[in-house]
Image: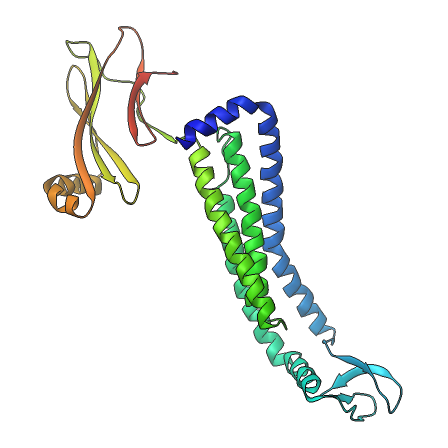
Length: 305
């Protein structure tokens, strides 16, 4: 139903929708790439900063020497005078000094690197598996591009929520909620992109066999269905025409076919339906036909139709 609706929308809006979808798709891919590379850039910048001998410190004006400079555990780094800071402020500056220590910075860099590589792998997987083919359709590209934006937002939010930077628990909880919302939006967009994408076709045979006495050609195949998981697999077994021509299957496939046929009842109790099916079609003499699988259905049609 969704696929028919999307096809109607693509026909209604035509080239305008295709241009918008292409811009959104390319922009989303660019944003996702930048979001994946940004943590690596920050790691490199932090490493260069440490190599230069710089670190983050609290800065304040000393009442004793009058200089404005970095503080160390609530005292002036220039003259060592105690500034008489409240305990909560002294606790924050003490924590800042600990976070600026070389050991912590190395551990934080390793943690950030692990997170950056994990997100880089997720971004690479998204770009590899969701890349829209030329015939993917405008709405598929549109939803995929928006999905790239959602994945970039999720990576940014989870990085802020789980990162080692100084950040309060309330701020981390807010970023975590934003990340979870982005993941939910991403799931919806990926579902819509899959529904908008035309079903992939697998050519089972390029030229149908010679028709039988009734002028028909067909195919015999094993069909496996799992309604709960939305799984469907079709294994061609033989081409039917003037004679039955078995398909040359690999040894593991032959074993799997024999196993499923012999234990059809057992698999049915697990929710998997095993069917042996035959599809036939009357053909016109002189025409060339092909047999394809499209969206889990076997089609016998004129070549080039």
